[in-house]
Image 1: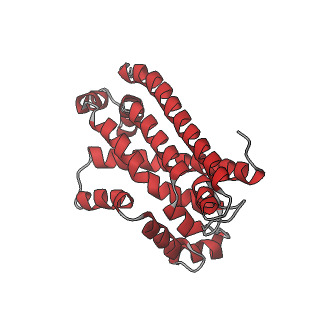
Image 2: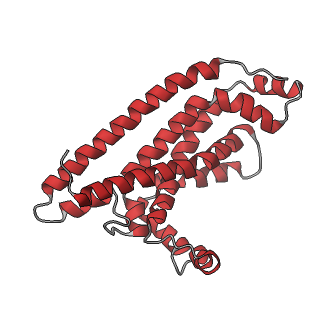
Image 3: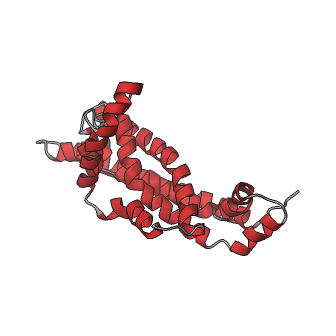
Length: 234
């Protein structure tokens, strides 16, 4: 595919943001999925609703809220810049944050479904053999829920590749800095003669999404045999 330097730049940035989004999202998503699946506490339904809120809110609203909180004059953003010199708004790192916020509920949902499917009796058996809660989670729950973790990672990656509303609101559409594939496609559709660049990036986006699905299927097939093995305890 004969892409221009600007198009390659947008594609490279999209992949960079998607990879970092997946890395950032997965650990807290696993922790939150376990919390919602295996614990009972007051206000659990409220926490569950807040986690899934980005799925039902307009992405532009999510991006604007991020701008209010994490912008250079935001309550958290001003503090980050003052104390650590960290600026997220209108930076590629801000695109990672916006994508992570949008992808987080999808990853949590995929992992939670997998954890719900794990028989609690196996966890109780592990604890009766002397394994603590952390060891039980790492040796029993997590391996058995591995297909869901893989699905959550792929969903986060794919969501980041396609994220537009929250990203463009929070970090704008700056070529070479925050312009990902979706924002580049939008920019080209607003430019006379931009139909072919937009089409090329659209085809590239479809190819990347298909590749992510193929990799997901491959990893899931490798994860299922592992998940079927019962871990041993010393």
